[in-house]
Length: 146
Image (cartoon, rainbow, N blue to C red; front, top):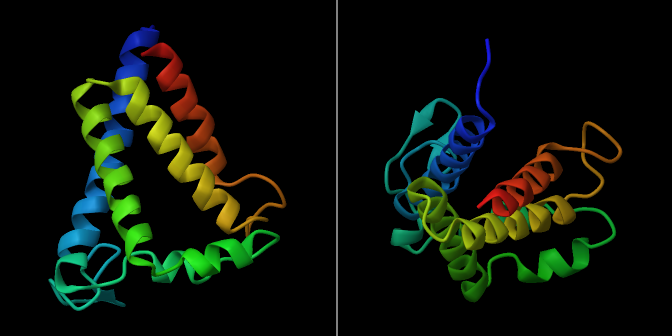
């Protein structure tokens, strides 16, 4: 089976876009996937949803560890950081899904996942590599192909 490289890059680009955009929508409206879920129970539009005044960076950045933890712990929960995070997710998602301004979206997504990687370094399951680092380099490749 021979699959064209351009097709594979397009599929990966689109999937990254959906991943970023869905994360933004879920965090804004609390749809119960990563936001507003407590075990098996889902409470839509709970107080964690950004639209209800929730703090979308407090959880992840608030659990930062490693040599840069002090920086990320100070950023956790700040209003401008919440806004910047959501805007970055939306920019990366929309540009990658619609293949418009893809280079910008890929760079924004790469910057976002690199910061997420740095905030929890070293990774829990491997002393150096986790999915954020793989996403970072894949997004750089998508940006280069754009």
